[in-house]
Length: 121
Image 1 (cartoon, rainbow, N blue to C red):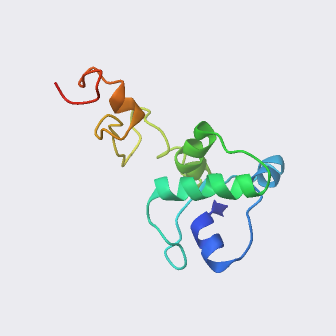
Image 2: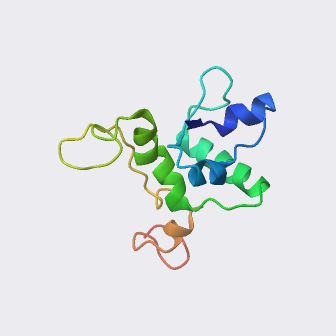
Image 3: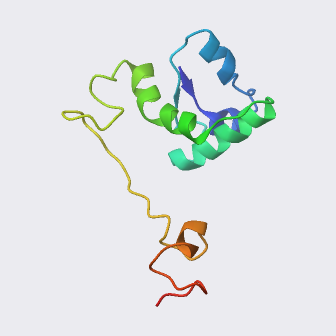
C-alpha cells in the first residue's frame, strides 16, 4: 500500500492511519502521487507524512520515515530482493545530503569547516 500524504491532503481524502496499517501487518511504503500530489520530492513527502501522523495524535520517527521511503516501499512493491537498501548486488538511486552545505544548518554551525563565529575560515 502506498501512503501518499501530499495527494491525500490536496484532495482532502482523509488522514492515512499508518498505525492501523502497521497493526494489520499491511506492507506500506511512502510515495508521491503524480496525479494529485503536490511534490515529487520524497523529503517533502516525509515532511507531510510527519504532519499527517501528528494530526492523528501519533508520531513518525525519522527512522520509521526513512524506512517507509526505502525498504518499506520496496517491500510494499514486492521488490525488496532488488531495491530498498545498500546491500551488495542491489539496485539503487540515492542522493547524498551534506547538512553542512548551508550556514543555516545546525550541523554547519558545528562543522570543523567553520569558525566558532559561524563564518568560513
